[in-house]
Image (cartoon, rainbow, N blue to C red):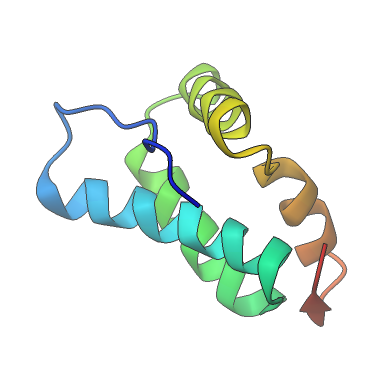
Length: 86
């Protein structure tokens, strides 16, 4: 898909890559499928970058607006384990 990822340009290059990795994992869950543990690794790293629940929700909402993919929906499926394909 072609869209701009929601990012905070105050983040370091490493932090931006971590957030993009989560966005890619969400896309993969919708388009091809992904193992729950692979998604959770990306999600847990993403949560370490963001400073608050409010910031998480802001970026999740912005990502859903540009991609139509829900980080939360993938997270809910990942909590069940196994292979995720939405």
